[in-house]
Image 1: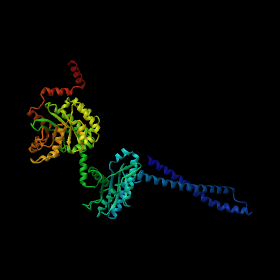
Image 2: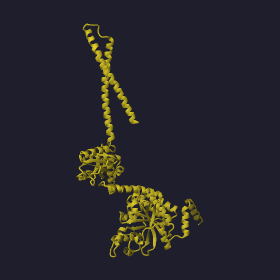
Image 3: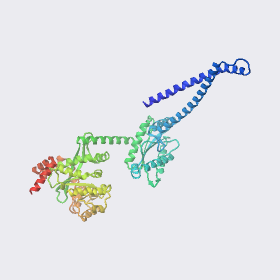
Image 4: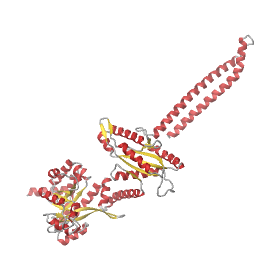
Length: 558
């Protein structure tokens, strides 16, 4: 509709201009005609010859003069109007094609500019590189220093990139902190593009000195070319494909630690497609109940008696079969699905563990993402009440990396859980950044020694000073310890010499499903008695207000 209205407005203006032009032209013709008659007669009358011009012709001549003056003024107005309209159109085009903050091209115009450059480059036997530049951790700059500082940083960033690019290159801002550049180069010398990127990193190495703020910047860059080194005769890809591939390469740079650049490779697209399929599969799997807990035995190293189980996540995918948590857990954390996934697994595990002997514990791992939820402790305690699971049989494992994101909030959660009887263990001790001060001030109930240290004991004569030191530290702090990664009798023999420990590893069997664990415990006589299991199941399905009322009645009776 706006285009149609504009067209009608221009059409009406053009119609009025044609009318004015017709009037002026007719006035000039009539002026010439009447003037040829009136003026000689007027001159003769002044000399006393003849009666003078006809009054009607004189009036017609004067009218023609007025019309000529009107036409001339309209012409001037039209000329000014056309100039203003041309300037307005140029300004509108500029606003539509450029970024108002940095003065670069914008996302809308970069595609057409890329196509034009590709046509020129193809005629000259050149290739075109598309580079996507992303400012690492730009959100933190906005959050810490405000959007004004962020805008100033982007302006300075654009200036530095422009100064580093060749004169025939084009720069565009295509997103909040994303820039793109396109440049034609000799495909026989792709190293020139690498040299250009190195200059960009050198330009960004100096801090951004803003008003009262100094900002250090790093970049992640993805590159793609319309020339295939492996297949020079292949048809060049379109500008959209160039941008898409550069985006994939930039994602790879982000994934590999940021502050680096990558050329696009087909394997990246395959990996990204698999990643997208994983994300969709995880979301669908949560709805379909495809995530199930598996359990790894935890035993007393001296007696070999089962002390409990650690719950491990497994994904039984209809497309890929049994999936390892190392594959899907990081993806679930990235897409914000880890809390829902963990809740499902914990609920499933609490139901399974109700059938075990009451002396057996259940250990669960908590993601750092879950510990960012200030209500996590309350949610977990509510699950224990809902499924009537004794808190003293639950052990929550927290990794060292969790302690540095918000140690005060983690301390509050640990205290809330321990007050209700839940045991807290520090997982993978020695692999992170926990300090002795944190061990002293945070109320942990157990230390877990990471498998990476235990592997050093695989030889009868081998020693692991780190394991010895951790065991000594645990004894000094009066903390019981669990050892991971016990895979053979040699390691087990050396650990037995270090004192009373609990351990787990493939020596005692691979992680098992709930049904396999139930059969193992049945053989060992470690299942809950039928009465205990029935009572727990009955209490779990009863309304919580009824349970509370019964407990209150029992306490009053007592």
